[in-house]
Image 1 (tube, rainbow, N blue to C red):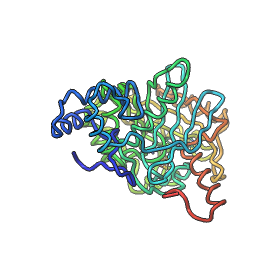
Image 2: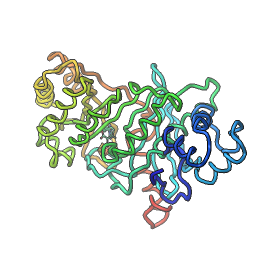
Image 3: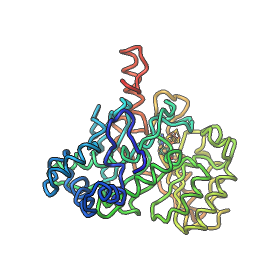
Length: 374
Ligand code: SAH
Ligand code: SF4
C-alpha cells in the first residue's frame, strides 16, 4: 500500500484507505478479501471507535488492524452551536493543527462543509482562511474523518439523521490538494461506505484552470462551483490575488472546456461586497461573461452575502437594495441566479473565522505562534 501517513501519527489512518486497497492489503496479509467489506461496514455504517468492537472478525484480524491502522486522528477542540442548528467544530489534528468542520441543517437535508488544507495560499482579500498561509495539505483520511466525526454527533441525537450532502468549501483550496480531495470523494461516495451520492457533493474552487480541466475527466457526477466574485480582471485581481496568475480569459477557457467535456452544470459563486463588486456595471460584466459562454442552462449564479470578517474592515456587506438590483439584472438576461441562504450567523460563520479567531486569542495568551504542535 502506498504511503498515506498522517503527520505525527505513528499508524496509518484507516480512513485513507479505499475499499479496494484494503481488500488488496488483507489478501497480502493472508486474510480473505471480503473482510474489507465487513471492516468498512463497522467503520462507516455502524461507526465504531475501536477495532475490538468488530465482532465478526477474528481476534487475530482485529489485532492485525490495530497494529497497522489508527481509528482516530483528531479530537474536538471547540464547538459552537447556532440557533438555526448549525454546528461548527474546531478539530485538533494529530500534529496540533486546528481545522474547521461545519454541519448545516437545510430543508433538503444535512450538509457538511469540510476543510481540505491547514490555511490557504490563494490570497483572497475577504477570506479569514487566507489570513494564515497554508502549513500543509490534509490527507484524504483527515477529510473523511471530518464527515464521520459529524455523523457520529448526529448518531447521538434522538432522530439519528444522516449526512446527505457534502460541500468542499471549508478552509483551503481543494484543487491545490487535488489527489487527496479526489480520493476523499471516492471514499465517501462508495456505496459500501458513507454512500453520499456524487450529485450531493459539491467542490468549490477559486479557479485553478488546469485542475478544472483535469476534473472534467474524472468521470464523476460531483458538482463544481467556481468562486468568481468579479467578472473583470482589474476588480478580480483586487479581490483575489490568484487572478494575476490565472486571469479571467484563461479561467473561462477552462470553464468552456469543462462544459464541453462533461455537459454538467457549473455554479459561479459571487460574494457581494458593498460598493466593490455589487454595482450595476459589475452585474452587466458578469451577465456578459456568462452569455458569452453560450450555455445559459449550464451556468448558475450563487450570490453570497458577505460574512463580515473583523480583520477586514475594508469590506462591508451589500445592502439589500444592491443585492436585489444585482440579481434582477442577471435574471433579466435569462441567467439563473439565486441569493444563498445563510447559516450560523450568530456564530463565527465565515469560512476560517472560528479558527483564525481562536488562534489569535491563544497567541495573545501565549506569546508563541500556535497552529502547529500546540
Ligand atoms: N477555496 C475554495 C473553497 C473554500 S472557500 C474557494 O475559494 O472556492 C468556499 C466559499 O466561501 C468561496 O466561494 C468563498 O469565496 C466563500 N467565502 C470565504 N470567505 C467568505 C466570507 N467572509 N463571506 C462569505 N463567503 C466567504
Ligand atoms: Fe482560500 Fe477559498 Fe478563502 Fe480564497 S476563499 S483564501 S481560495 S479558502
